[in-house]
Image 1 (tube, rainbow, N blue to C red):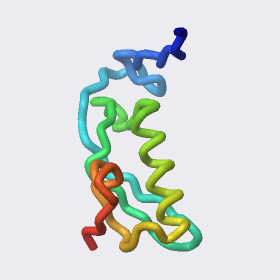
Image 2: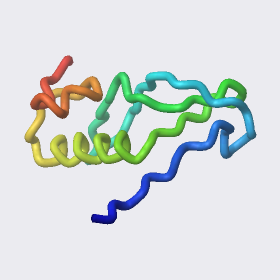
Image 3: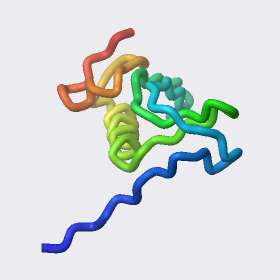
Amino acid sequence: MDRPQETKMNLNCPICGGQLKNDKIRENIWVDGKLLVIDNLPSKVCMRCDESIVDYKTMKKIEQIIEKFKHKEIEGIKFTAYEVDSGAVALA
């Protein structure tokens, strides 16, 4: 059975060519006029320009949180990335 291959992330920043390091980021997203804050997202962060890059799995997780937030399946404004897998309990 063929499965789509995820593209591996480069070791250099696509913006400035700087070195990337594994880190956790906070994403602030405006959804329907409300600020949604997602903490502890795994990402690659450029040591030179601070650009952050998330992989496909993390981007899908962000999209899932946004959809749940839009449809009021989760309440609050601040979440950690892992909470969406366990029912997305609000922190604040």
